[in-house]
Image (cartoon, rainbow, N blue to C red; front, side, top):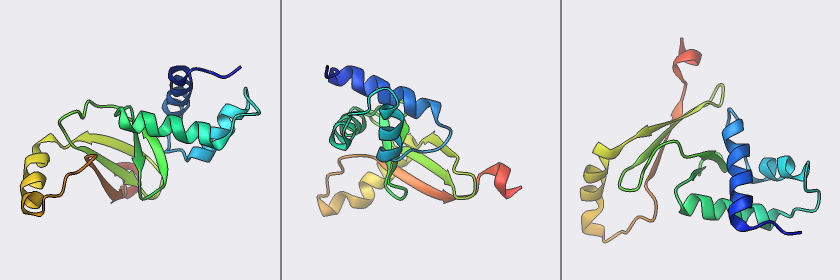
Length: 128
């Protein structure tokens, strides 16, 4: 029996929240296959697309992986710091940066679909 989209998304959010590091779509698929061996990759990708469009999850472009959204970024900027040593991803509210970035691109007529900024380096624990 097929699960409803909302139930599938909830299952994926539970998996993302339980992980201490970002997860790829195939890692999420493997976790879901424990209970549903027949689940296919397109099902996971559809749910992840919906979750990112809803702002409930973020896709880390540089890692091709996903993390749950932990802030409200409806009119803000998600700033994600990624530790290249331990894999820790922390989310910060970059709201004050959004007007500056918007004015930077104003003359280009570029219309951003998402506001996500990734910074890669070392977290405080790893750089100590």
